[in-house]
Length: 389
Ligand SMILES: *[C@@H]1O[C@H](CO)[C@@H](O)[C@H](O)[C@H]1NC(C)=O
Ligand SMILES: *[C@@H]1O[C@H](CO)[C@@H](O)[C@H](O)[C@H]1NC(C)=O
Ligand SMILES: *[C@@H]1O[C@H](CO)[C@@H](O)[C@H](O)[C@H]1NC(C)=O
Ligand SMILES: *[C@@H]1O[C@H](CO)[C@@H](O)[C@H](O)[C@H]1NC(C)=O
Image: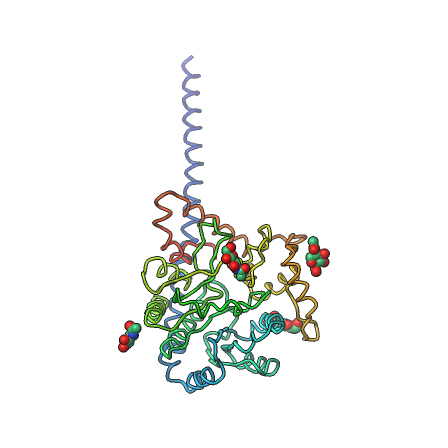
């Protein structure tokens, strides 16, 4: 008689302990995993910052300003560029993407004349010079940027520091300029819109998000932007360079923060019917933008294959430009029929991660009061929060 309640108690106790154990194990495993990811993240952050630190001088403002190459660049800009130039950076691993882009933009009048390519290694310089002789080159061989690099790594940080210091050097010479990326399809020329003559702002940036209702609206995307040289923009880039040299943060994070919290310079944003990220393809494809940024992949190699799938790869196997494909891509954008089904291939890991992070970002931004408060700061912590990358 006495035994059974005892047994019951024992079994209840056992169950309790067991379930407790089980949930404890789950609990600890979860935090263990988060801990490992966070450690790995810290490790990456430290090594990226270290990488930038040890390569800072090769992309430093002083090195640029005191180089004969920069002096020559300013002369060329004075002589041959009645309108502000547009700068693009590349090393040899971006050559295929760049070729594709130059084929695309060769179909638009007066566009190549505005370009200056910053080549980071000799292969890139020689190839561009050979194939696209009319394009101006600013050669800035940088050993720390010789390898292919991917998002959130030290080399990525270093190239942003170079970009910021080059911007600073140009501003100090009184040169307004565009900074652009080759992973963009040009349906029409953005230069036709004469943003350079609109004096209501000091800087204009493309924006993230998917339309005017997006919470990420007026967040700098950072692929295409115009800077007017003046004291305010000089200070803007001095602070950006400082921050990039010591912090593990995306350059756009700093730009978003500074534009959102400073009175000057006056930042403006290019509307979605002029520049749009790849998210346009996944929208209802109305109001085709002039420039469609195709940064749906983090990896340069697979990126071009991905573009091929969407019909944005225009280089024939013999290296010549396929102008028919280019005009077809333009009309498919105009009639809203860009194919994006993911037949056979799932969205890549890179894209899934970005989608996840945008989802989390929008969620945080949508929290009343807190979201508004977080707005300028969230992007600063971008690299740190992306614990899987
Ligand atoms: C660029 O394209 C050429 C020809 O299609 C190919 O052989 C080469 O491997 C590509 N290079 C890179 C870095 O993807
Ligand atoms: C810009 O800065 C320079 C040097 O600091 C100064 O001489 C000049 O007056 C400033 N210009 C304006 C418009 O504030
Ligand atoms: C973009 O949309 C705005 C507002 O609807 C309009 O004023 C502007 O003309 C459009 N720009 C282009 C280039 O279509
Ligand atoms: C859109 O453009 C493509 C390429 O020119 C064409 O094949 C297709 O028929 C067009 N669709 C519509 C609905 O006009």
